[in-house]
Image (cartoon, rainbow, N blue to C red):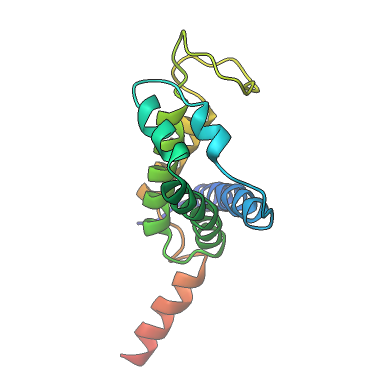
Length: 159
């Protein structure tokens, strides 16, 4: 697939911005030994509220959830920043964001303990970022700007 220069720059900037957001969020959680998703999960709403509350109240599940959340965010972010395994990371990021959205959907009538930084109706920042990852998945750039370019280049040279 060929991109215009502006299109390529836009897609790479989008990939790197989301990558930074994921990486930073993951590292903040990893570097804070007191961090846990328990309060966030207990504050969930919507039709999956009981599932997220169960995750928060089951200590082994919570440990696993925290680990996946911390390292998932950091590794997905690192992958997007460096342009390595970006298709897999885009799918993984969309799945993680879907869980975030399902735990705190932007539906009328659901109130959360933690204030939101905006007013939302069905579509919120989480869903917008999920859709942006779908764009990154659909229009990959890492084979042009990223570590994947170096891997493809080496494979081509060795053949």
